[in-house]
Amino acid sequence: MAAESPQLEAKRRVEYLSIAARSYITRCSSDRVPFRWTINPYRGCEFGCKYCYARYAHEFMELRDPLDFERRIFVKDFDPVRFKQELTALPQGELIALGTATDPYQPAERRYRITRAMLEVFADTCGFRLGITTKSNLIERDIDLFQEISRRHYFTVSVTVTTSDAQLAREIEPLAPRPDLRLAAVRKLVRAGVRATVFCAPVLPLINDGEPDLDSLAKAAAKAGARGFGANVLFLKPCAREVFLPFLEEKFPLLVRRYRERFGKSAYLRGDYPKRVSERVARIRQRYEFDKIPPQAEPDLWRTDPQQRLFPL
Ligand code: SF4
Image (cartoon, rainbow, N blue to C red; front, side, top):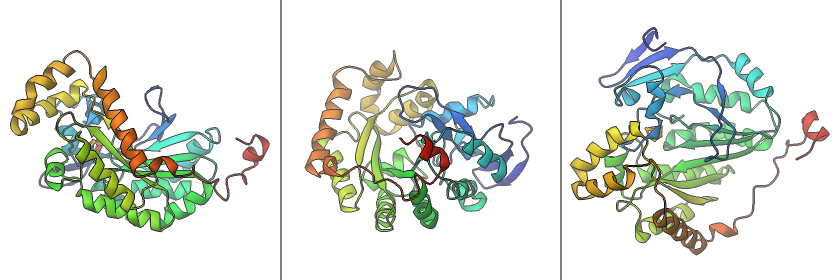
């Protein structure tokens, strides 16, 4: 499929290609995540985060160079009628995540607007639990749609901010918008009545995991009005290791041996470290009273769908 994809455009560093989508909404069987369905408007992501686990998605298209993931971006052909049919065939109340293997607000979205076209369909349906994850302040563009979607679905935007240190962010997430721009987007979303949270992911051992680092990020998130704060420890699948370990060798050479040892046998860290990070994050959440934020209110139009009335949640 990759070899046959027509080219849409090429920049100095990135090539955009068109790809047909067999289906837009994919069932997720992992028990490590809370959602059941995923939607990814693009394949590949120009932000090029050094730790990105989604590089595997290009391996399915027989693109073996891990850098292809950030240099060959596939734009899905979008048919709103087919998308709506797929969406409305799902049981009401299902948890859907938009942007799990690509950032839905990466630079390609400015031009191709596939994410926005998908959101327009959500703004015309009701009764799902939708979450969007992004590192981009381009998300502000769609506030008008989010206000309508929030009346119809349980809806949350999760803005990923790995560190409040702009220099560090530039190194680990080279083309993603600066942390302060992401936090400003959170502020705008919340002011517009859209539920937005801040998520620090990944927590990188000995790089951004110190209590002062996480504390300053949570403090900035609270100041922006975020309705939640969380964090996840790094995991390193083989496709991510190929990019992340050379990056460490260049920027953090003293950490290479420890990372190789700890991630040598498994992509996931086990034992004391993840437990201590989660205790640290729990303390910080309490400090900024994230744990006192009430649960999301029921959307205005949640029960207007006949199926919801038949079998309320
Ligand atoms: S923004 Fe997400 S999908 Fe894009 S490169 Fe970074 S981690 Fe990967």
